[in-house]
Image (cartoon, rainbow, N blue to C red; front, side):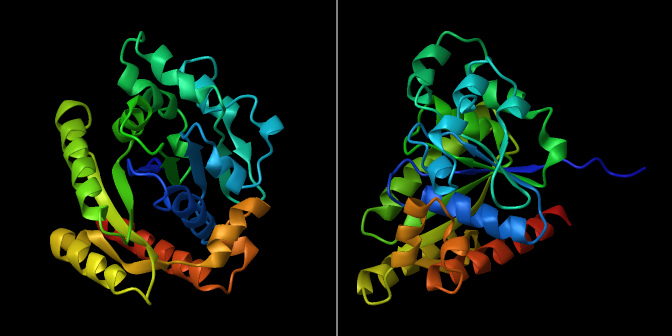
Length: 263
């Protein structure tokens, strides 16, 4: 009997903003789709940067992750196709910022996303959840729904301090709601090879987390910063720049790690 396909759900999370979380989600998803994987991004950040970065106009976000979270729409109703073959998106909406207050009154409020995803997993190989930059009820929903967490970590002085707090949260979610949750990997982002601090932070993170840290490092790159304003992942905006090459390498490494986990 053939094994039923079920997507691997990965939450891209870090409670600190500006670490390359959304950039990683959209470019990793694009690179995965380029290898013929079917990928869904769920934009769970009220800022909606993943939706903007994939060129989705606000007028096309009428049904979005807010409606899914409060039960006004099923996940399938909110999914839209992107310009990238194999890559779909559940966009974010401005109402999502108020969803946390509304969800407080719901039963099983931390399970809303997991329950919404349940009937859709067979349609995809991977689901990437772009989390908001805080450890709130939306992020908790992502962690409860996910098989694994991917943590983008900026190469700066306070990086390790912030991620240790996130790791404790992951452990608490494992114990209380989702025993199968695991740390899939840590991605070093905004690496500046001209800066000794970047090297020091990278060395400290590798010493602390060992093999959980991906070998691929995402460099500081102007083209990566420019791409979202054009509504494109950097892989489409400038495929030959160092940032695009890094995300292609990261996708290869992530998929290799995934194959090893499933073996």
